[in-house]
Amino acid sequence: MTIELYHNDMSTCAQKVRLTLAEKELNWESHHMDLRKGDTRTPEYKKLNPGAVVPTLIDDNQIICESTVIMEYLDDAYPNPSVRPKDPVERARVRTWTKQLDEGLHAAVGTISGTVAFRHQMIAGRTEEEIIAFINLIPEPERRERSLDTTFKGIESRYFRPAIKRWEKLFADLETTLSKNLWLAGKTYSLADIAYTPYLTRMDHLQFMGLFKNRPKTLDWYDRIKARPNYSAINEWINEKYIPLMKEKGIAAWPRVDEILNE
Image 1 (cartoon, rainbow, N blue to C red):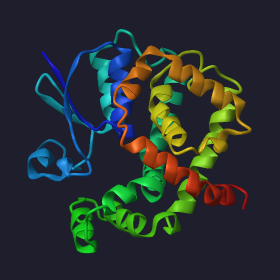
Image 2 (cartoon, rainbow, N blue to C red; image 1 turned 135 degrees about the vertical axis):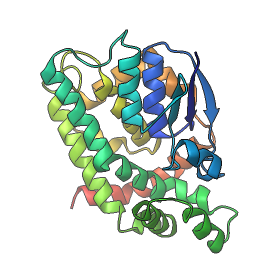
Image 3 (spheres, rainbow, N blue to C red; image 1 turned 90 degrees about the horizontal axis):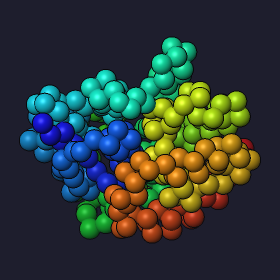
Image 4 (cartoon, helix red, strand yellow; image 1 turned 180 degrees about the vertical axis):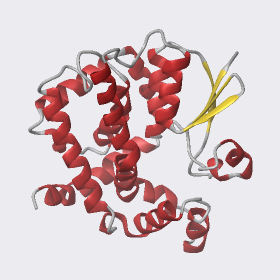
């Protein structure tokens, strides 16, 4: 049987799942979705994923949505090697870390990425009416409202400052944890480390590494993460059209980020 993955090259959620597949050395069939063209917002794709997002996994004709759920499913269905600790305390730590992403951190990094860089892709070649019509295809009203605000206002969006502050707190928590443990859940590499890998990578691509100038343990963790074989699941799918844009716009936005951090 073939594992199928509907994903996007630069999506942080899709990267999480690809990292998990790579760690387990599982073969899978790729269905790449172009988010800028609206591939996930078609009626056909919404039959697979009503949220109109990536990733979506199909395994043995079963459809699994939501990246954290997919990661846990893969560890249940293909337990060797396991990426969840056996110790119940460490397993709880994994859930605590991934829960934070699902309860606001992922949306916050989407806000940061969108306001700084991706809004320029959204706007290019479209009229205001076309941009609004495209955003209105987002099913959830809250996500639709956030996308409208971030697309048209950039880093002046009311969502930008809270997003930076939330990730600043997270990175402080990472540094505290990694000062005590080798990995986020404890002694072993786990789904918690996999889950946060794309987000550190995103900050790197945006040239926001100033966030870690006094966080040596986090930087060491990031270096160890990038040295792992499964990091190829990110490197091999890098979209070179995105990198210069994120670098240019991220450098331009950094003074505002620094100002927020020093408030």
